[in-house]
Image (tube, rainbow, N blue to C red):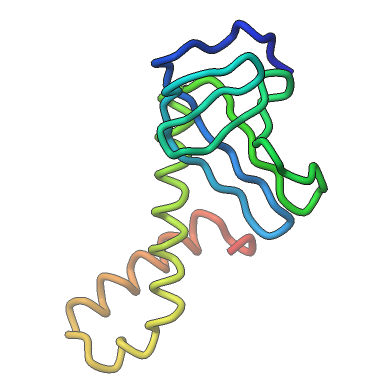
Length: 123
């Protein structure tokens, strides 16, 4: 829980959306404030008392809240999301192996063999 004075207008924040299915993180900026709310540049409002989105149910299904901006945390999140997108692309397009060149297949094969040697049965 954060104190009321942790943020001020102009501060960067990370908007964390956690649900039972996934977790997301977006960059935003505090554009204004009222006595009880932080107002972000994405037109969302967050309670100063809890940093949770105004009007949310507070149920475990979806929680939206703001936390102080952290460059390393944000960049790690973006890298992780990009890696997941690349993995999903590979899974969904495995049939492209049929039309790839021999050199491309050799490259992919050698990467898989190296991963197998490195990680063994954990792959």
